[in-house]
Image 1 (cartoon, rainbow, N blue to C red):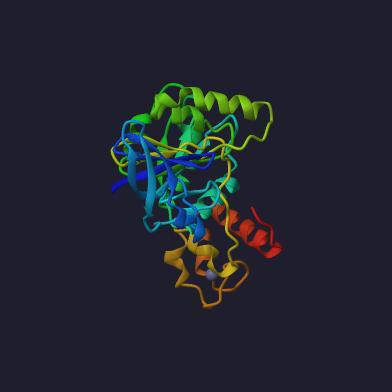
Image 2: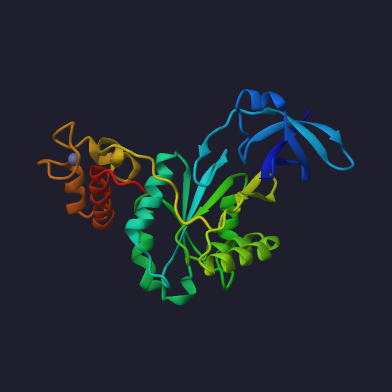
Length: 292
Ligand code: ZN
């Protein structure tokens, strides 16, 4: 048997990359009986039926490290959250929502601020500082000028990466810079979305180097946020955690309680007011039971 990676599925066929060779595979009948559905991103073992025409059978699916729902893809290591520094202006509560979502799925996170060619450094310095102080790796790029692409590519080595961010942030342009063979596909997608059509896209993994994959989903603008409870939300703001022990009450939700260590840290400027505002906003949404 050969070990490979499931990179896409079309019309009941699964395409498995075995060291750069793509095999068209059917899953073993046993999977259907057991209701096991292969997921893009799965590491699989295949039997080769026809080497010349690259056909095979998926015999085994390895245990998944994780599985995202939207996009439906498994064994993801990290998310690159892409926001433009301007055009459109970044919505920080949305950015924080992406981060909380990724944190809750225990993914490594890289923030990419794109379109830096459109502003002076002093205009976006504050947002970079806020997220660097919160503990995130921040990369500055200009997809149009190709700036920062090598920094970004370095972060993608030996990982499986999903790109996320609002439309207009320049995800497609960045993906094209990283992987020029994607060119046509992303153009195709932006044309479709430009017409406002909701076309279902098949998720596909693109190999960008040894053990390095990106999930080709430039159309995805949001990551699912699992329903969380108010008590655990702070945990997804990594810069809050050092202060939790200083709260007077164990049950502190860091909203109105007296002696709250997190609110004190905000007051002292150790935690950004903007990040804390996002926290409060998300707490409100959880209370209202809204789901994103
Ligand atoms: Zn507190």
